Image 1 (spheres, rainbow, N blue to C red):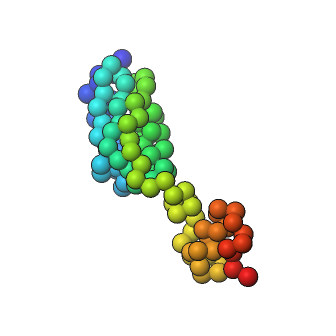
Image 2: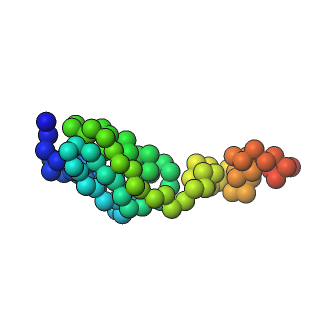
Image 3: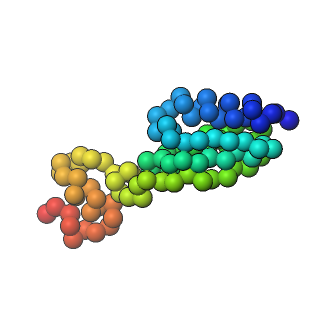
Length: 102
């Protein structure tokens, strides 16, 4: 069984290799990883959970991360479209075709 220190070290090392995790704090007790702090969006949130769960010796994850932006259309959609209009992209992603360009 790996020590809590070794697990914490590996999780932190993997998080610092990527951007977006500057405000994520990691603690480990008996193989249970606790992630706290905040991330910018849901994609980064899911990445943090995946990164922690991929570390050898992790038995469970306590997710206490707060997500700053819940706007899925903003984080998933393109900023420029073939129409060159961010508003059109949001309309398409939200299935609100009444707002799409003619």
